[in-house]
Length: 304
Image: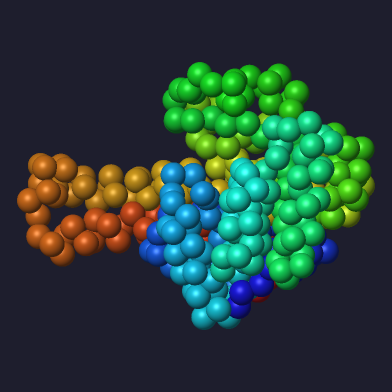
């Protein structure tokens, strides 16, 4: 069933579990998300990023995701992930998404509030929910190295400097009336450099949960340890965005599949059409299995 993110996350907040929010890239990844949720009897949130795709492609993914959501018995929200500008957010509202995420986290507090409050009024008037971000999560790009840009968080001190402040979070939700708040508590977007693991500030999460009325969200969930995944829901996080780990698991599955050929990838290239189809199927199986694993860790299994 297609629901707003607000409906799904309010339930998660009350019962202290966390909902997986994987990004999708095509119709097969959409089906993989739905199958994983169905297999675990769990709610799920489909995130759609505008990065690298056209408006038409975004509309198509939103329509496919919403159609799949309507056909399943488990609760599903379809969310525009990181709407970076006004046009992207409005397009998210008029699309088949049931929710949007308006990202103004790099702006000053006052400007962030001004822009998000306006979008919040529009989203609510359209019957949709809205998520926003306060603090700066930052981005790591690449499994073993970071790209040298000002947006990349390089050290633990850099990450901590962008942490969400409790008093600001309370004011922000009151002023913007957002339905969910993404907070910076130690994770970063994308794959972590080799040897780096996120150090999540659970005391900050608990303080935010007690003070802030809106459900809390963590971005950049890939790379988080299983032990920390299990602690997120009880601490107060209701949604975690995921992508890099699902891709990595799909690649792992395909690597194992290719290892069956003595000639490696060269052998696969010259293999039958059926083998090529199996190769592609294996990637999406890895994608799906990782989502199901996260659902179990996050405590949202059997919560549909």
